[in-house]
Length: 560
Ligand code: VG1
Ligand code: CO
Image (tube, rainbow, N blue to C red):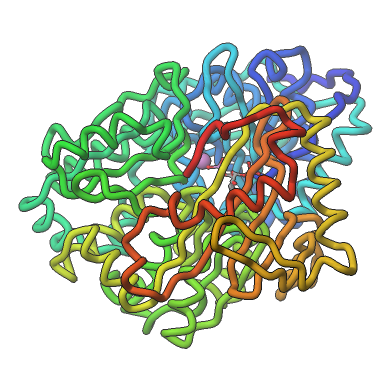
């Protein structure tokens, strides 16, 4: 096949956000739009990285609308750009954690993941392209900045338009590319196999299987990529009952819903759990890196608690037991502080990084981090370099089996031992950008003013005194790289925190996130409702930011 050089010109705004480039499908479908970004990505893989990575790139995505076209485009461009091999999931399907797993297992140079995660899909939904590096993790900022800079000056891209891959058939397809000494190889692999093998190494299947013979689980894939993984691993391998798998047929528009595992968008699961028929309810996002954990009756485990519970009980998981326990824990800055208490209790080092999984990778590669999480339903470990929804579920099953306890009992025992961090996040989606930016600017000015520390804020009978206000700045302890402006943070003297951030995963307008975290040792108060407990701080935060006044939004779109 011939290699074609296509003339193009830059598009504005091809800057990868918190997790790749995400835009509405019609934007990606525009002439040259996706090709420009793919060329910029491929051009940023150095000769040395290609060599070390066996000239191989892994490609796959969450099944959303436009994914198959994008896979063909990427294969054509990889061939034209001198890569020797592409490994792609059958029908283009790979969960995000599966791509991370396959990159590592096959020692590839990197991977290209086609997903906009929890954003809705379909012809008018979102699409996304994300590059992961050889360690299996999201490209760090140095790489995403290089890609962005390339998109600003791109003049041409390389493509082999005559290559079309049969994505349905497992096995190897070869293409002779003009001017290249070796054939270009595309290997279509089963979407689940490598991931399943990895799970076998991490967890004890017989133990989990025995547990699932006695309790019922309900797993909602929200019509995203996780359907095949749930059916194969949870049902076929581990014997979960037939009615365990719900919405497990991937749809390119996710059935018209937000494939986002939280109390709002996975309300069906919550209602099913309220029947009391199931001991464990779990949901995943479109690309399978997020998870929600519910106990019988719909008992909700906040993600900040979930990672803390897994960390505290990691001796129930063979992968950690083998290596003599955890090396370190980490959470993103806005995530509730429950994990910090566990780190303290176990004498394990603790790290706080900016929002986004890419910041955990260096610590893991350096052998300093084993278990980490984000409040945004992301939980994971150093078995791969992405958050991993299914891993979180398997971890919970392992703990339930070892402790012989229910989800609720495990969480209550955890609070009794470590105290409880109450946590909530308010999302204001699709706000006009101007007032959102104005609000952030105002808050930053207020909280970084010289007289802010020591100020007191009251609501009802609660008063909080400011200990610190800043715009979070992170220096990577491994490579020294600095990331600034990672969220406006107000810390009060009792350790309670209020944080404001603008989302970096939306595709239109602005999304404001407001996070509130507060620690409670009083056992009598630990079982109270988080919204009730955090009400004073929420009101203080809304008032000092003037969020309602500036955005015109009385209520958030989503509360978690
Ligand atoms: C959000 C979450 C963040 C997460 C990111 C990617 O980012 O807050 O914690 O890492 O999504 O997750 P933002 O910038 O919108 O707050 V996923 O599952 O969308 O890849
Ligand atoms: Co996701």
